Amino acid sequence: MGLLGLFPQKSASTENDQWERSGSRTYTAAFTTDCDESYARSNLGAGLIINYPHPSDSGQVVAEISVEQGDVISGFVNPLDAADVNTDTACYWWDVTVTYGPWDPLTHTATGNPVDQPIDVSFQWQVFEQVADIAMTPGSSPPAYVPVVNSAGDPFDPPVTREQLKGILRVSWNSLTFNPAAFFTYGNMINSDVWNGFPAFSIKFSPPNMPQRLYSQFMGQNYYRLEGEFAFNPNDGGWNAKPIDRGYRAKNTSGGLNKIVDITGQPISQPALLDGSGNVLTTLSDYVQLEFQVYTSTVFATAFPNLTTLFS
Image 1 (spheres, rainbow, N blue to C red):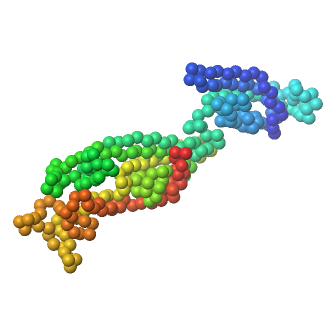
Image 2: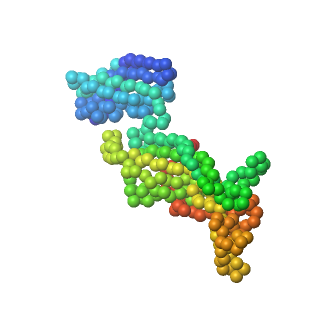
């Protein structure tokens, strides 16, 4: 079983107003009589494979291959070599058409394996409103940050707000396997270290949906189209909470807690600023922010091993 000879017949080429090039080449091929159409299509030679580059134009690749068997069995004759060792071997002559089209590195897979298709990445900003706990003193250089309170040191009611940005990174990729227990477990987890250039704790994997199950004719098996949404928080500390240290009680010299009172001796009605050690703070510029990790963290390079170089 095999190819006895492949002979070029004619070629054509087209270029459109988007500078996209396409074309075709036709051949006659001789295969031994035990070869069927599947074998013939897949065994035309190293250069005639889906997504293989055009022989003289790397901007085109093989987009389609069609073969059609002739009706009559004949003895093989090589029109270019009368002394060919396969002369008179019983064969069918096949018409072969190879169509070329533009190469798109973002969608094509040279191997036919859907897993090798490039990962699809998009990013956009979302705007939402957030209470402004701290702000810059106007005109300060370098910026001097102070708590947002009134002249008496109390928070504003209603509070001062500002527009806050959140980045949404959407990623889609193919996988031959799918482990729902692991994939869904990562929902609402944040990165414990730098991931794709984003600082630790600044990326949160949103709870995912069930992926779409597809079928690859080339692979002869199912595969999954996984989609992940990663939320980027550009604030200092990322998704960690950083509230200003304040409260209604302060530590005493013996380590106990006393209610904070005003100049009349009455318990305060608004939380007072604290110094990070449980003592009342008297200077606004010395405010303290505490930090709490409110989401479980994990190593994203381990959780998503194929998503470590999204921007390279």
